[in-house]
Amino acid sequence: MLKCALPTNLFQRQVLSNRISSKTAIFDEFNGLVAEQFVLQQLAKHTLYYWTGGEESEVDFVMQYGSEIVPIEVKSGTNVNAKSLKIFREANSPRMSIRFSLKNTRLDNGLQNISLFCVFLCEQLLENTSEKCVQ
Image (cartoon, rainbow, N blue to C red):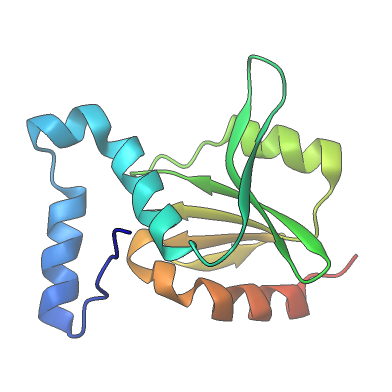
């Protein structure tokens, strides 16, 4: 099994940040796949599923957290338009959703955006998010 080592200091996090956000030729083509694989490895202890809403929409991962079903979308950049996640949220009304991206970590109306560099904080953020979300 492939394991992703967590950066232990600020310099290592900055190097990781520069590598993920730099636009090399191979990364231009596979950046979404690399970001999804990175998140998948970090969430490997959970049973993960995916969701499709016909041919037009898909959510990268869906997992159970306690009694909640949590949709997870992964974006490799700062463009966080997630039509499929919006469709899933409208159809299923989850109390919380997660979007990983290069944007800063923040909670917005039940959608927890987590910076790709903070994937390792996902459990803690989910716990905090579930306390703040009201049915």
